[in-house]
Image (cartoon, rainbow, N blue to C red; front, side):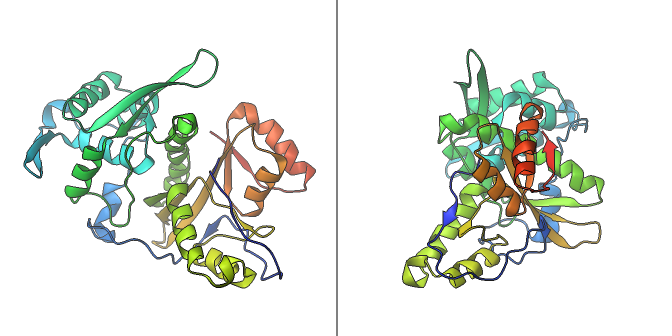
Length: 308
């Protein structure tokens, strides 16, 4: 459920977009203090893929990290948790336990208690549907500043803090699980994730660059070039933006990226068709897959829908 589709007023038809969902992309990345590309792979491996062991807690001694005149004591497991929270903006506590702590919920709670006591993370329990609620965790502003100050954040990786839109919390929290599913596919093929780009970042960059275009950003040739610059496609005069992009190394050490969309039963036929035509890899909950498949079949679109 990307928040917005970048659009323009079509005047001339341009070059047909590419629809392959995995492309080599040369996208300018923001400069951020952090580890160089060669070292950042390990920092962003998200060691908590389900079933992966953690370092024993008794051997994970806290270390001191400075931010201004304050000193924070953090274990490696807590730093990894902060990195994942900052990368995905917010994460459901159940998914954090499953993936980052190999289902060791007790250890996760101890880490979260220490992080909350130092003012580095915050959590909220939000209503979702009916009587159901979702417990989510996110970095605080201080947590974001400290994480960036540790120099452990991979170069170019955006870090977020706070729960900005509670109404979208359920969808946003599911992106962490979406990443885990696609990252497992990448690693099974011999690759390794490098960087995660959320729709916020893509949309921000598109908006900034469109503001610098001539004719109010409505020239279709310029829009085609803008889309291509960001590895995106123009579909029916619009630039669809995915929920998430994963940049990764292939088994041959090529850098590629895949654009992901988490589709739900609330998608309108035009919306899901637009995402499919843009070449995104589509994921959905199992209970939504049949309806989405019928919509795509009705428009003769053969995009595969992966189960989340």
